[in-house]
Image (tube, helix red, strand yellow):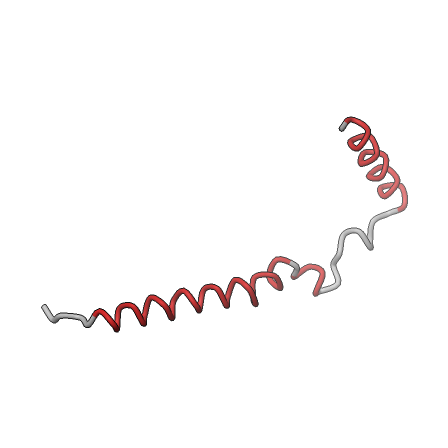
Length: 65
């Protein structure tokens, strides 16, 4: 078995952590909002009656607090 230099292990671990942080900060927000990017936002295409019902439900929830 070959011995691995500790510096190489730390460098690989640091690069991996930096890559995951970059991935999480740059790509994941776009992936989470991919429907909005595509123009498929549910709130914009909602019928007026459904919007009113949602607003009534939200108002009732606020009053319960």
